[in-house]
Length: 398
Image (tube, rainbow, N blue to C red):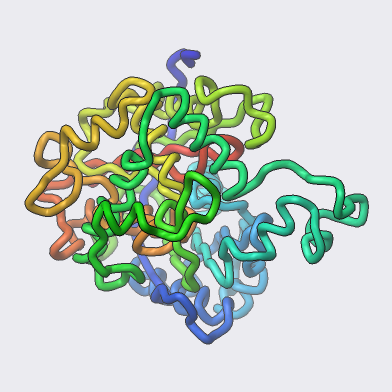
């Protein structure tokens, strides 16, 4: 399904000017608010601003809990806030809210934050997915132990991963390439929580979570927080850092937006988001210098490459092999364009796209150290999954 060209009056008029992070770890042994404040104060300082210059706050997460923006504004001592809202993950929702606020004049400098805390794929989520035991608290009193409630998270993605393999006659090794690429890139990222080398044999021997997805196909649960400062491109140009402008944004949702309601992989929220982003962008898929396809589950990355047109449906594994750099054990499209150079959700840590956005901004500012892509000027990000939270972000260095 094609979407007609869409207007994009905000194109390159709003920028990310500040970055902050509270380091990722499997267990930080601290509070979520502490991590958010640590990331936020660093982002504001990185932007060359002070608390009294921040008049917008976007954060928290209706889906995961998170910290309410009013609490963050109070804890930071922000004296004059004119815009605040909560945003459901992934990070594209947060960024879109901030961009709209700046563009409309509702706020001039918006603090965007996202945190993950004790967010994993453990027994509670498995029970909740089928309406059992402790999961009743999340599902409501109307559900009983004998009444399944949809197919969410690993359950739903495992079912679609199996269908993908069967439909296109593919093997699990295609998923493994996504995991291996992320792990090889994470070796150059001191902030990544999973940096030990991973081989295909090691991947195939990984503990099976939900057939055909193993532990290496699912993002790594961590504690941590990221923060960003978003303001006008003009104001960012006067700041201490190279501005990174938001070139285009998109979201995607179908009439059947959940794992257990989707009819096929031919028409998903990801395809809606992809068509919308490319229609709003001056850049085509071959114009980006670095790619950040979402990898909360390895299937998402493969399908993203197919949906955006890098290859045909079912051929993402072959595409990755065609552009595999044997010397580094990772993907370099046409020998120059990396995929998730920070390690992605599978190796840096599962941050619902916040880590992807941070790395994209660092790359376009030329501050990624050993991971730096020479002369990187544009980045494509696809936060979110296939069904109800697909998003697209195109960034440019100004």
